[in-house]
Picture 1 (cartoon, rainbow, N blue to C red):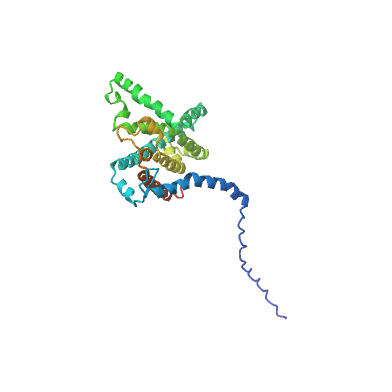
Picture 2: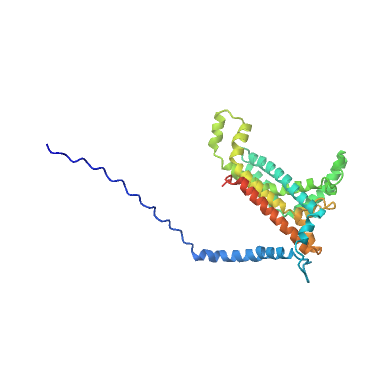
Length: 307
């Protein structure tokens, strides 16, 4: 009986190195299209910013001769009560306005995405304030707060409403928050509408089958699913409100006294008052604070983007 040769097992496949990834070559024409934007951005923003930081270490008044004075301007800023007051008002106003804008805009978005009649027409009406100039809005509301509301308060016997809110150092900020929110709500509203429309309808149908109430659907389904849009609106709103200027100028011009003077107003008025180098130091500090806030927001919201 002849011996049979056992079948040889097939050799394992030899591991092969993955093919090298070919990096896509960027066409030079793209750089050509990018160049004009880079030049304009550099000339309009970067270069003036660098020049301003340079002059913040001098005693320049914006024209004529100047000399270096080191960190004198920066040291003086921290002991200037007007500057400290402007920072406190700006941050307090920004936080209050962000809360008002996001709460109102979210509730409106929920209503305008529900099954109601004429919701398309209502959306159009609610976004009208977004296309009106801020200074025009401020002058219109200035008339209302200075004339119409005091007259209504006097006729209704409401003491605190009988005088203009804009003349009250303790209440003027409320008027500014109201007007700023009135203009900012439409933009925030559109983002929330986009977020709510992106939620699949099957989720709400399943919740209805399980017997979830509308309140439970709102708190346990809608809000968690649009949390990324909330993050976007909070970041965009807070950054925008830090630079508040035109509405405050039209309403109170920083008054009464300096109760409603923002950082931006303080810087601009300093330029016209001969404090060019001093306010450039203020602008530099404000820029650093804004960058730190942006980095903090990005670190807290990383991975929670809506897109």
